[in-house]
Length: 470
Image (cartoon, rainbow, N blue to C red; front, side):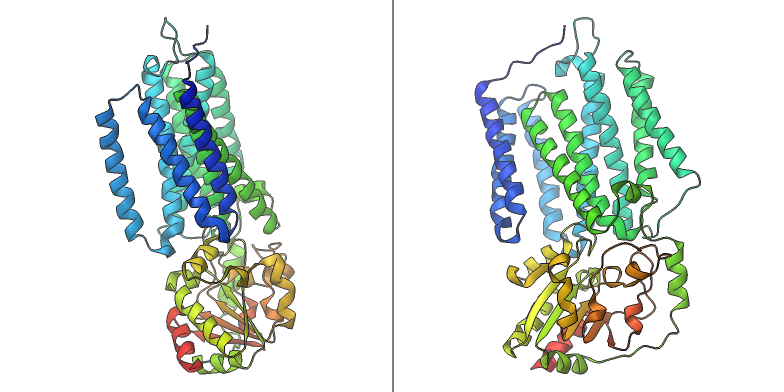
């Protein structure tokens, strides 16, 4: 007979309220204008959930829990204070890996001592439903951990952005996934150690195998996908721990991450399966980049850029990862303020996968106090480039590359891009002509007649433009 854990009605109510706070947090985070309020709801919900869990703790002693929390809090505070905004994608990937590993450790602890978790009968056999929860939790958690490690290494530059295509990877991946599911099904009938540890090992392996072939341009989707995985892992462990708050929170994170991944894939005109199967950034793009370096192009100066923008009626600024690396968002807002003083209308165009994580550019612009009503998504502003005097592109390559619309051999073909080439003048801030975007693809916009290349560190170039604007 399955074991039912009695639930204190006040504890259930507290967890329900914390779950409502998490829902309000997600609602608030859907808009920059309400994001701070959303964060506050999330903090209140988490404080309530943690406080309630401490009140009803049963496994470890309170001092042990508080010491562990103090260590984690100290690491979190130091990391948050030291981390640069440009490193936020890596930090998010690292956090996802920790959630995945936490799920694995909880599953391992529950397997080794099921009586302490209330998931075993008098004979020591783990309940069937608990074996399913445990198997899914350890599998999803291990995949999240190892996949997040690869994502972190790619985002941090320790691994290249180009996909690593293993021979027969689809057959290997499908075989490993089928093996994991088959062993979890067998685990419901036999709780032998070799089955549990084999599922754990194969899950760690498939996490590496799934993320290694994914190219740099798909990393924002990978980050949101891993976020979803971490949520489902937490939800599975919530069932094992009989913790309603974990189940609710995990389900919210898992479903919202999955929806975000779908939205981003649709924005890139890609199917979710195609991203997981390989993604952008193949060899053809690298070859094109190498062949294009001797094409004619025009170089401009900060004074040239200041003059052109000062005479414009409208300037659309297109930020990308290059802006993030140079930490140029504050001086960019200063430049926009100067232009507005001269009567120029300024807007910002944001591509859904600009940067290295979902909403990366929105976060950086919000940090620089850019007005929300000046920031527009791709579908809302793309039609305006044809009537715009100057498109000011600062460190955005792949998301402005017209090859995505015309070149069927390009690894980014089919991804909607910002039509910056349709502006009367394109000012393109870039470190050098030798580099290409994260997908490894050269950009034809560099060589167009209406393009002026501004080769320098993004922050230094914008500072010079601000000086020239007076």
